[in-house]
Image (cartoon, rainbow, N blue to C red):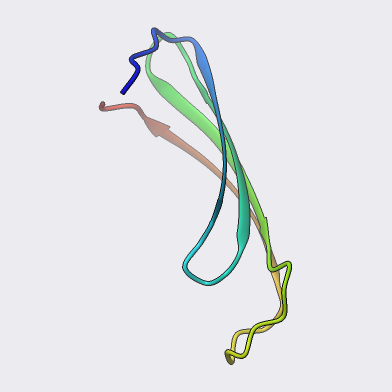
Length: 65
């Protein structure tokens, strides 16, 4: 694990357990406040009852790690 001194950006791409491809962007201020945004979409049709959807989320938090 790499420790980065804030301010810092964090970018991640991954697949959720509901088969959404997600892209996350976070900014950590020098005071450890975290601002973030996430966007996700389902690129492939699945055999589940879940609809083919996309999601957009924004959040604010505090970095405790």
